[in-house]
Length: 274
Image 1: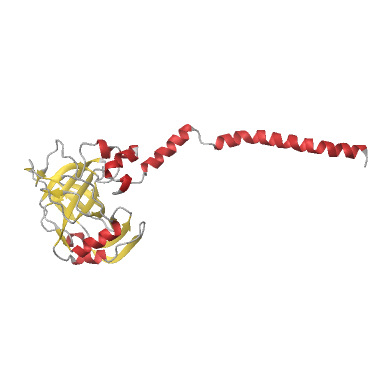
Image 2: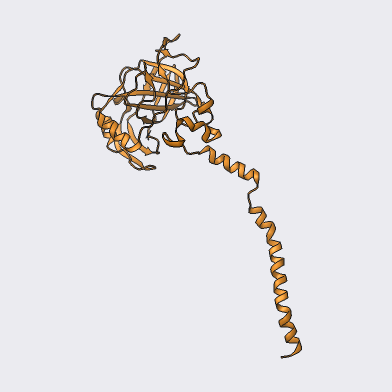
C-alpha cells in the first residue's frame, strides 16, 4: 500500500467526524423551532380548556365545573344560573304570547355522553312576543333539573331555540310517569346506547303531538345548565307536564345515568307566571 493510500485512510475518520459535527450544528435551529415556546403552550392549553371534560359524578361533578376551565368559570361565579326552584312567582306585567310552529319531520338522535340530543330535520320555531326563535335541538335530563314548589319530576325535556341575533330561548317541559306517550315511545325505541353513537330515525314526528296542549308557563332569566353555563338565557317552563312511563325513565337512566345539575340560587331575580 502506498503512503498516499495510508494517509487517506488515516484522514477519512477525521473528515467523517467533521461532517457529522457540521451537520449537527446546522440541524440545531430546526430542532429549536419545533420545540413549542411558552406562548404556544399557553394557547394550546387554552384550546384544551375550552373542551375540558366534565361530568355529573366524581371529581368533575357540577360543584367543580368552574375549576375545570377558565371557560367554565361562570358556572361558579355567575349570579343568574339555572336550574332553579320555581316558587313565589308573581304575575308578569305583560302577558307573553307563545306560539309553536313545529313541522312534521324525521329526527336525528345522538348520544353525546351527557344526554340524548335530538335534531329536527325540518324548520321548526316558536314565536315569543312576535320574535322568532328557531329550534336547534332538544334533549333530556333525569331527574328534572327545575323543581316546582320544591318538587322534582322524574324527567325534563329542554327544547333549545335561538333567534337571528343569537339570543337563546329554552322551553322546559316536565315529564310525569303516569301514562304512555305513543310518539315518545317510538322515539325511545331508537335511543343510541353507546357514547358518540348517532341514529337517523326513519319516522315522521311532529313535536306538538308530544307537548302539552296547555302552554301556560313560568318564565325567568337564567343560564345554560351545562358548561360553560352561559347566562342571558330566556327560560320558559311549561306548567303542564308531558306523560311518560317509568320504563321510559329507566331506559334513559340505564344509558345516560342521572344528569341533572343541582338547583342554583335565585338571587335577586323574579319568576313571572304567565
